[in-house]
Amino acid sequence: MLIVIMRTTILYLSVIIVIRLMGKRQIGELQPFELAITIMISALAAFPMEDIDIPLLYSLIPIFLMLSFQVIISQLSLKSTWVRSFICGRPTILIKNGKLEEKELKKLRISLTDLFEQLRMKGYYSLEEVEFAIMETTGEISIIPNSKKRNIRIEDLKLNVSQEKIPIPLIIDGKVEEKNLKEINKDKNWLKNKLAKDNLKAKDIFYAALDTSHNFIYQPQKKEKS
Amino acid sequence: MKINIFVSLLLIFIIIASLYSHNFINKEVEKIENNLKEIKIIVEEKDWQKVNISKKNLIKNWKKTQENLSIFIDHEAIHDLDLSISQLRLYLEEQNEKKVFEELNLSLTLLADIKKREKITFSNVF
Image (tube, rainbow over all chains, first blue to last red; front, side, top):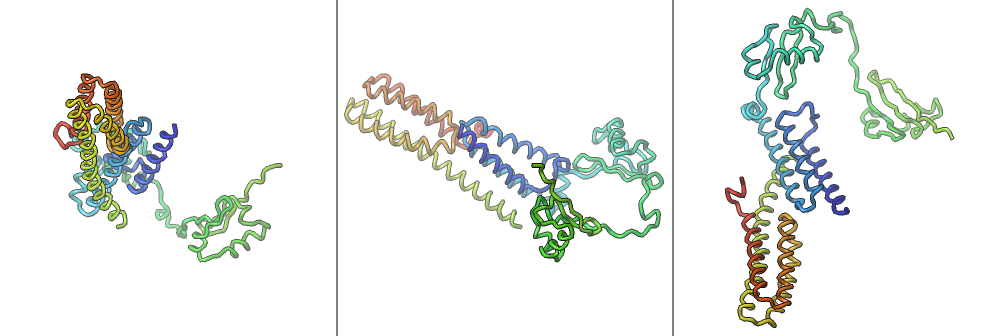
């Protein structure tokens, strides 16, 4: 039993390292071959966990080898558009200027039912609402709506609005985020003064941050009833 | 850039380690093969005193080889060989010549099979 625990721990840590090194994209944004590699890595890690007759190296070597290949392919894709189009393919226009591209639909083996289903899921219920529909290399469909049918934007109303800033967490679960404090050129004394108005200390705060307008907001920890 | 260097080094390490492990497995297997062949010759000469010494050498070498090989090859193959060598030990103690030769042949076949599995051949790759 201890052997299973040790093997599982080693494989789990190896998979975390490999997935971390492979990059930050979420499952939904992976290229098809990247998704296949992720699934293969999971399968490779799973077999020796349960079968202790399989040497760990039979799993670790292929996993790290796939990481190497993946990084090499990614680098080549960055440097060469030819490699990128060979590995990942190219985006394909399915609707152009509001008209269905029959040839491209047939090439990608996408039926009209599938296409309209995708459009509905994106919030476009009629063909006239869509100017361009592009099938990306990940299999997702991107839509450029018809200008007359799209949602109103702020610029259409000619309103002046200030740019929203990124919210910056300063305290999370009672712990001060010193790196973020440094980012905004403030120190712990400034934070202390902000909280002193309500007689609170940093450890009493569940969450504190500068919001998108850079106003200081905070929420104290809930005190457990004794 | 760091990851590129890491991955390049990793790839080189894997290739070198694979070549080393291939050599290592062959050497370990040959060590046991030589032990077994030595025993075969001594048993043919019917020198059971000398057989005892060779048997002890075999057991000592096999214990070490077993641990080393288990890192690189399927444990089932090692278990089969371990069983065979245990049987051989028993037959040597009983001085049962016929059984000794049978078991020696089996052990040598299993060892040859381990070497064969590690060779880069068409059938192994596909």
